[in-house]
Length: 284
Image (tube, rainbow, N blue to C red; front, side):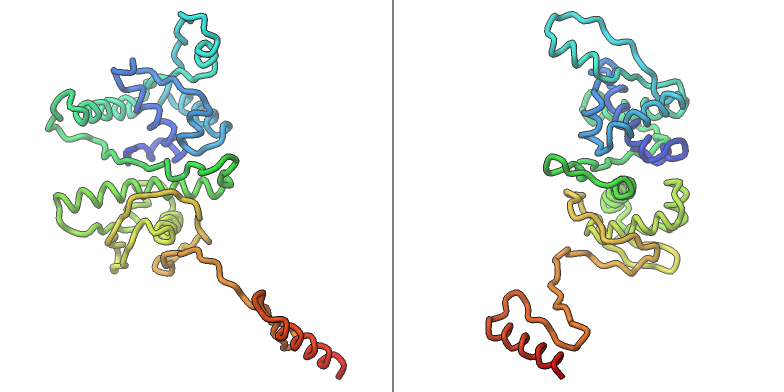
């Protein structure tokens, strides 16, 4: 992804567009994206309706265009079916979409060694988003709608911070310090949303931070792994969240009459004593 995407697209549209653009700007793949809706769902962690809605919105905004399906050159029913159900998409005519795909293609060719990277500065800052962290570990597992929207935002910000942190460690040699208003303007999110996302990053153990007078100093940004435990709550105040271990605690229930019920591992004698005490209490 790049930071400029969020001036034009929601995070869901940005996820779909950046994934499609990765293939549609590649000459080796014919500058054509050809995948089914289910394939997009598996890669991006969205529902089929969300994927279809995002594609329709991107076509309306001229970020993407529908391409003609190639003629069927084989009688194999399996491959003809895949051609029929797949989306065939190319980059649209929107100026930013063309700029994004052009710079991304240049970056990909350079990283693959096809040609040397040009020294001209890119207008967009690209960063990897580890969306595979949201992929289900078993069949039927999926996030609820609000959880999914929040966790997708979490991975977007994590990708930006991880890229920025690696750049600072290599070239700047200083810690990564950013303000909430800066992140809010860049991501086009409210300041409360930015704080909630940062708190969730801390709770999931992806970042460590300390608070400055006006900035958040990210002391460590770890690689995103599988997000299985999720988050416990959304908090809009920074500095109130600790890394969550998600170890369930056993709470002993206290009755209103002041008698403490024995735990599951109590001996028969303890249970007998409790019942005798309860009988004596109610007989008084």
